[in-house]
Amino acid sequence: MSTVKRKALGRGLAALIPGAPSHTAGSTAVGSAAGAAAARTLTDSRNGLRTVAIEEVHPSRDQPRQSFDEVRLGELAESIRSQGVIQPVVVRTRAQGGYELIAGERRWRAAQRAGLHEIPAVVREVAPTRAFEMAMVENLQRADLNPIEEAAGYQRLIGEHGYTQESLATRVGKDRTTITNALRLLRLPASVRDLVIDGRISMGHARALLGLESVEAMERLARRIAAREMSVRQVEALVRRERGSGNGAAPAPAKPASASARDLGERLARALGTRVKVIEKGRDSGHVEIHYHSLDQLDGIVTRLLPS
Image (cartoon, rainbow, N blue to C red; front, side, top):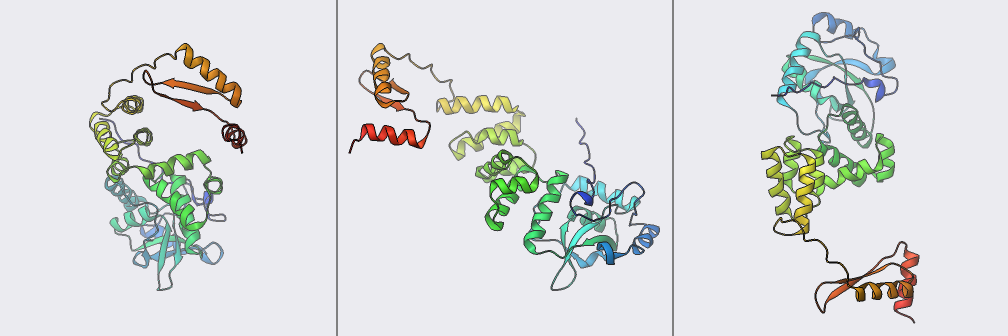
C-alpha cells in the first residue's frame, strides 16, 4: 500500500500578501503558552498581524475549497498541538462583528481540534470580490484544491467577477489552456465529478471521458476506471473505440475512394480553390467534404456555389 506524502504547510504569506512577514524555522509559534505570549508582542499597527480569539473567526461562504481530508486535518491538529500555528490565517473584519476567513480555513479548523483559544491572523480590509480572489490564489499556490474546486473557482471569477480566460490566466499565473481545460471538467456529470473530488479518478481520466457524447457512457466508463485502476492511456483508447462504434468494437477501416470519386474531388477542388473530398457510403450515396481555412476563403467558396 502506498503512503500519502503530506504536503508542506505553505510557501509563506510573502507569496500572496505583499508586506506580510515571512516565516522560517525560527518564526513565532502560537499554541504553547510561550508561543502565545510571543505572538502578543507583535505590532499589528504596522503589518496587520494580531492574535484573535478563535471563536471570533468565521468561515467564508465563498471559500473555494469545499472538501477537507479528515486524516490530514487530524495530523495538522496534532502538529499544532505540539508546535503551534506557524503561519497566520488571513481574515477581514465583518460588519456584524468578528472576522471572516480569507485564507487558512484548514489551519483554523485544526487549531479548534487542537484546543486553541487564540490564533494568529493577518487582517486585511478588502472587498468581497478581492477576498474571494485572494482565497483562490492562496489555495492554488498550495495546490490544495481538487480539480473540480479549481474549475468552479475559475468559473466564478469569470462569471461573477468579470475576468476573461486570458486575464484570469495572467492573474493566477497559469497558461490559458490550463484554464480552458479546467473549465471543461464542469461539463462532467455530477457523479463523475464526485469521483474526481474523491480522488478515485484523475484529472487526466476526466478529460478523456469528455470525449464521450452521452452522460450514460461517461458514468459507465468512470465506474470502470475507479474499479479497475485503469491508466489514462487505456481510457483514451476505450473512448476512441466507443466513439468509433456504438458497441465498443474497433471501427472498420475506411474504404479507399474509387477512381471516379477521386477524379470528381479533384475537379471540385480546382473549381472552388480548396480541398474537396468525395466520400462514398454506398453504391449510390455518400457526401462531399469541402475544407476552408478562413472566413474569407469560406466567403469565396459560397460566392462560387451561390452566385448572385
